[in-house]
Image (tube, rainbow, N blue to C red):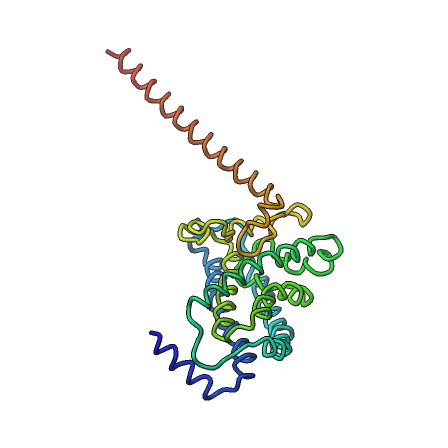
Length: 288
């Protein structure tokens, strides 16, 4: 497996320049991962398949989905690609490499863990600022056009927000000057994460069921369906920032209320069942 990765990387650096790989390669890898992971959730919503796992009952219309895709294509080519090109000299100056040998998985893993921690911190505060009245009205409300999110809405946002919150994603790599392989791995994981938390579905196999502090779709879906002044749940991947600053209180209260309601309903059903059994026994005794 390692030799296959090495030979594949050798092919890339032999046939493409550093600029082509760092800018165009990164852009097209992003597009492939984003649309291939996001489109299935859109099709799920249209087909209403696995609807029992959908967090909200409401579905987006085909027109709303098309509007999202049209906006994404415009934003990706008009904002994302130019930013990647402009960022190249900075990443190069900070030490980004493309040559062999590839970094070890220990180095890649260590850097990506650092990126996730740093991105969560920066994203939380940037996102919280975007929920102030003026910035929400003039910038962040574009992203919240979709109160019922689906995977592709994760990157549907005002150009200013793309630049503002995109800083949280790129700051880690800029500080460490990673190998391009590390940058591509980080970008792939970050795209898959943001698509998943906007997917609108909570499955038994969702990561939030297995990874402590991972927010997931249920956590972020609450943020989208609440008023901007009361939404909370500002975190990106992990929820520790909301926990520390108490901005997940509304979500926790809702979950506790639902749990209490479910337990009460279950208790009433048991009581009703017990009453029916007792009534049946009394009828049998009377008839005898």
